Length: 483
Image 1 (cartoon, helix red, strand yellow):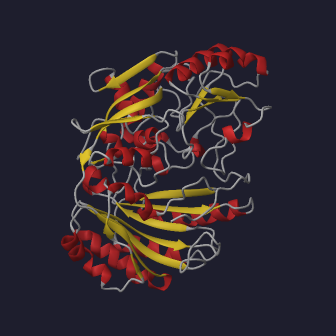
Image 2 (cartoon, rainbow, N blue to C red):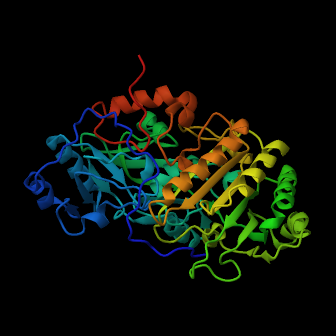
Image 3 (cartoon, rainbow, N blue to C red):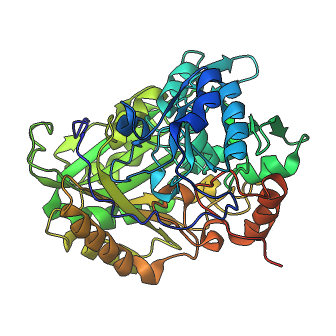
């Protein structure tokens, strides 16, 4: 469902992006002639602060993040990426790679060359081997559509507009998570450009340390493409069951009991939604509040009806669960198709206990200001559980549930309200929190150990060996290697 129009208004960033990079390459403001050599050789284009199109070029999907790079390069191919890295080193600048900018809240692009890889949109699918290759600018929706053309499905996140490389290498938590695990576990190879400007390929046998670091950790290279395994499409039913917000207590508790015996082929979440009174929201949702259960069930209609019977017994006012192709899953969660000014936060829960559900219900219902559009609780476990998969820096999630809340920042004064409301949710759920943070849901700089656990020091070592000068800015900087 389309919730908001694209906004051109600049807003105050409520997410801190001021964490200093670990780079020894000094940020600088350079005159335009310093970029002449790069401009003359690019297949894409470069934009500087004084040029037309500068604001559009530097603006990420997260409209609340005000990026201030020294220049923006819009790469057309891997040669542009390599050239940009070499020129950045010559000029003494860092490089901050970014595709769509969904994760812009943690990337420090200040004084660097912001390297936009969204032009690298190529996707190829090999139906015989059930594999795909996707460029750094390919979106999850485009990859899902390409795979479906061959009766195949990719393990992806829930948002169709997010860049495949950033989302998958960051972990990737979507509708097949409980049956297939994190999307990062499906990656079989990566290609990119290292800090010297050389092209590199890594897989399980070539550059295995780099391949390990990239999957769920931080790649100390600029990844321009990845290869991943696909799986065959089977029966799939998905959609939402919706009730008035007055039913929140009953619905959340019923969902908590329902998930206790679910097979791993069912991934679901419960959420409280507060729709603003704007024309883009259709009736009967406009200006109203609801509680909903969203689910994807890898089952035929009879099995789905049996599984959903306990929830349907509560007479939802809306029931959209129906057979669908995997590419249609993007519509279930209702992520906006265009950039919007929004900010969110998350809490990983060690378990979805009755007391944790009490806290979730209280937090969801205690926020009357409308600052938060959505507060949701995702069911994890299954193939996401520790010990079920391996190979990458982060290959599992040690928690049973994930709480995520998001608010819209239509005007600067809303930033404080959203931050306060999100903090209240985090505080309410803190007694049930697991020690880790799910990387794809970390919208502000976080403690590396919370993101990567025992893999942190090894990650630091891999990054130091590939990029000792810190030329390539990481989305989540890890800091120096511990001596």
